Length: 65
Image (tube, rainbow, N blue to C red; front, top):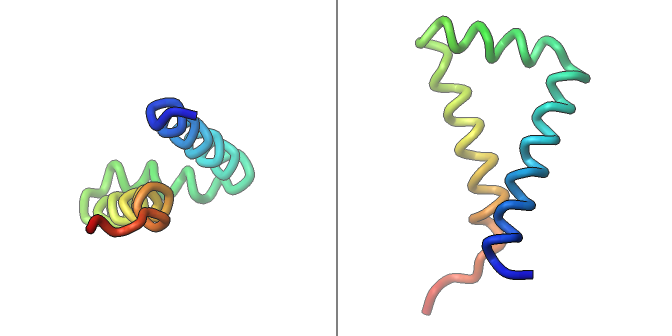
């Protein structure tokens, strides 16, 4: 599996998980909707998305030598 295909697959899985979570937990969708309206809460959403991206793409990498 080449890196581009793997990245696209990970991104697709991330989107599918987000959609599933929003369907399972409608309160999370309401929170994100409120956060988009209220900028003072929006930085939490950005922080959570950045943490998710780091966990998916950055945690398992070997350090460069």
